[in-house]
Image (cartoon, rainbow, N blue to C red; front, side):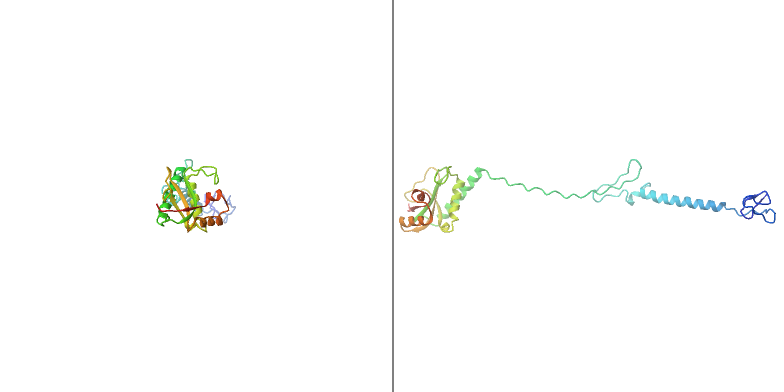
Length: 247
């Protein structure tokens, strides 16, 4: 029994049955180096490489403890939570960051309109402040003025409107007269009963006039006719000569 010097196969004949080689027709008793160690070493290297590859892949997939630090179990910056593991494969599932949603602007609440009672109280306060301020200008000193309006709450004047006057409407009329570019700076407000030959009634009456300080009734009448288109009683309803005598 010998070994083929060429391929290392066991020879039981003068000629190798594997490679057909014979050396002088004699068998060699020296066994050829076997290639099995090389094959075993190569297979081991392949197995080791596969283990390395599988280990790296498994580490990245979170198959082993501590893989959370590589990203599988990191805290999400957007959501503030930690990703969990899937119940099926046991792999850590990285949580997708929650989209940032811009907060909707809060609607600006509409201001609550004042009630009729509040409007009435405000109008009364404003008219009374006008009376106090105009009193400091000495509006009653015996001069002739052009009376432009005189009203109390609830008074009716069909020549001006079909419904009774409210206090806010009285204030609107006074403001309109005060804003006149011709004589608005001369408009004053006093109470009925503040001047001679006038008596205060049960309700406060606000009397509005232009303090033109004319010497006679005729002069004031001419002033009214030059500024208003009405005539007769209609003119007297919006512009009337009045002497503000001292009490």
